[in-house]
Length: 310
Image 1: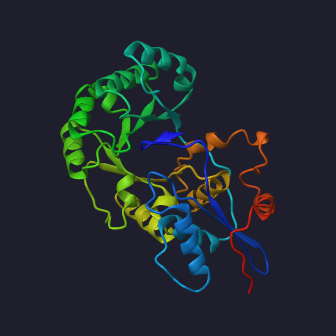
Image 2: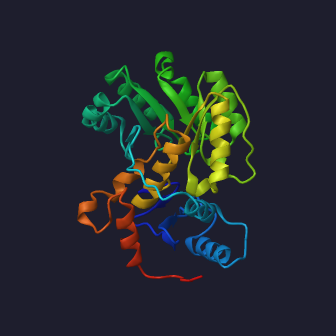
């Protein structure tokens, strides 16, 4: 899996297992390289300090895990709300056309697609988007740029879009790192934006803007359940979409995000497209996503980092 200049072929996480009188509680600590400021070792150390009575300022991945332990044990099998379409790097226009044609079945069967952009020249991607929407005129698209465009590249992409196709774009997620400039361009071009990376900054304060339409919240990167809920509530108050999203957690972490989404965003399925990187589970010893007791049993056999009794 490649993202933000990083390529992962494996995923390292830590699990917390707490036994009370009645049941076990599980949580996953999963900072994401390239996005999280903390390492796994730093997050585990902070979590350990909190367990021993010291209450440090927990980094986001540890804060998410800490709050998860206080929730009733609940796992939900992840469901994908929009098909994910990557345009492989290095494709010529002819090769890109051929690749899109190879995805025809997925495009025709989908009602919504998440298209990763800012991986190619803007005019190539505008051409690709137009071809996809021509294949399925009923399709809606969410573009995710991960702040990969410079302002002029965002302008070029937007200017090359047909007005009818712009109407089929639900939103463009984080087109540029400069948010005020991105919002100004979106207003000029008649596009709606979604925030993701900006929500992860501890200093970020939610605000209204007519060109904003969605918050995409990654719990392992945002932090505490309270912070996630504050962002969800603010988005709903504005009439915007609010969705929880994965940051390459293990199947257990994905099932926990899905359970949280059932509680806080029941009308909007979470974005858990990274689940496919752990499939098929039949080729490994990973439990089924929503089998809580199987996960407890499986975690008990993992190498132990720290143990305490009261």
